[in-house]
Image 1 (cartoon, rainbow, N blue to C red):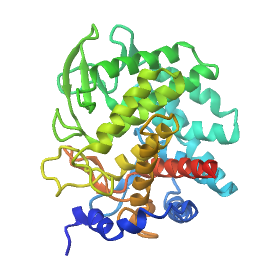
Image 2 (image 1 turned 90 degrees about the horizontal axis):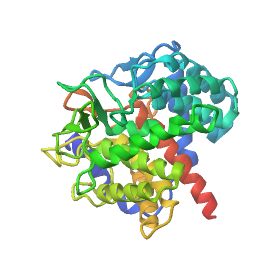
Image 3 (image 1 turned 135 degrees about the vertical axis):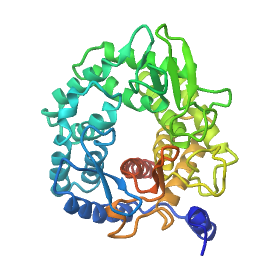
Image 4 (image 1 turned 30 degrees about the vertical axis):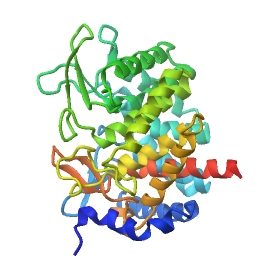
Length: 392
């Protein structure tokens, strides 16, 4: 029996030549997603229990609305509505979006972009439901309370080890929410907070090879106290999902500001990611690029999905590597759409993708479906399909 950790790689060795020649059938992938998520909705009648992942025994692992991932299920339902225009998905998306509305007042987390902007932002974009706007504007203001001008970054956790001002690379993903709010009736200062945070992260989070630390801990005067990891293999390792968060975040920063330094940084991260000698042939990374037992380490489909979505957008901004970014994103999506990474029809607690890793050092969500892998996979498929249609 093959080593299950190597199964995606072994599968792609067999099918890789076929996958590389054929574009992804987005209709088929969304049909499968719809089949799975109808089962997910049936198995989750209680909107206080948000689908998150699977427990080691295979049972569903649900969380409450204050968990940082609570917005991804509603956001994924909006992706299904966008693709199908089916009122069934609109109704389900509205239901699960409103289920997280109370988190607009949550000032104890930096993840309100994930929690609120993924469901409400997509819902507002697709329906222009005016009831969503004040919820998002309140949420963005709540997020801004975690910014200390003396430090110059949005605080992530309230404490990490002995440090009182930790900032994680993941925080780059919540800045898009602040830009939206500043453009849609919120405090204009929100835009400046996002830019200041991105600038200080650019200054302090990245190594000479353009990989990023996971956690940078700050002193009260804004100087750096320590550079650490929480979910990576080591303080100096390149945690795969963290690299994807940075890639996506700086691509968004360029979109929102047109400042070339952000485009340059996004490209540098992309080049680090795609050229790394430990990136497997199927382009789905190990959970950490420097994990100690490669190739006997788990893959992280979620990192692949996030990177694919970011690379597709990055490819639209030109440059000598634009075609490469598009092709590599397509290759990632081909892999994720293969049997190696897709859930069993009707199984795996009705998730779409398997083989993600949440926090291996914390012994949490290892080689399992995770809700944000589905969200960014569907987002990437939508972007991919729109780009193919535009290309003719």
